[in-house]
Length: 295
Image 1: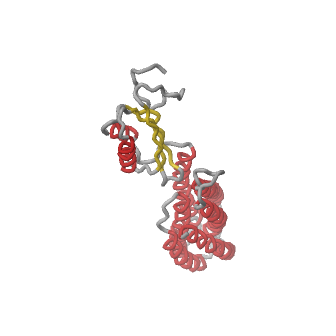
Image 2: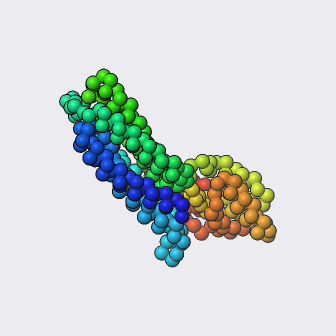
Image 3: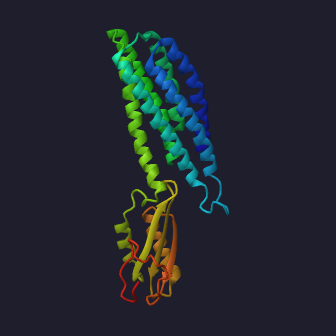
């Protein structure tokens, strides 16, 4: 249960840190720090949700969720990502208005806060890194953003101290928020692909079909459907036309070929050449034309 425990740790850390930051932002008058506090608060909430959903995603399949709960982890990633996107947009709008009327900031206070921020968040990244699924990755992304945010604040506050240009503060928040927005939108695209049952990343349907057709005893195949539950576990169903009586060997060969393409869960329907495929949608993208009968 390491993944959920990491997420829980990230949650507690973020929540504690948000309070610290909020007062730090008020004390220094820094918009970059205040905007980071808002971002961290959003993080803490979304990481809390991610923790609950990650725990749920580990539950065994049952009669209600025959596929198990893996999608809950994606739901966690979706909520987290939406919070990040909204938070970034909110920060950018606020910072743009500050660009036109920069206010004094306490740069020494900012430097101290930034050093603490970099240390604490680096520890969090170290603990939460290496997540495999999208949910854990989006939590790690949060943590990495926090470190980057603080590094930027540190450099910026030193720059403000040297140059006395307060405009650096809102410019920094725009840079950090822009980066967060960009990576969140990319994450959002991946999550959407999963919900829309898109062919899993890294799987070439064309290659897969030509490899399957090359197997001995496979006369043709149709109804090949591929999808992924959570970006890690890939599923496939397909119909194979064969005259072979050695069905067990054929199925093993098909499963082995599928595994090489990163597909772990395969459901195979075997049909005799003269058999009529009862599925009315036999015009699926993967059907191969067979002269035996008309659909």
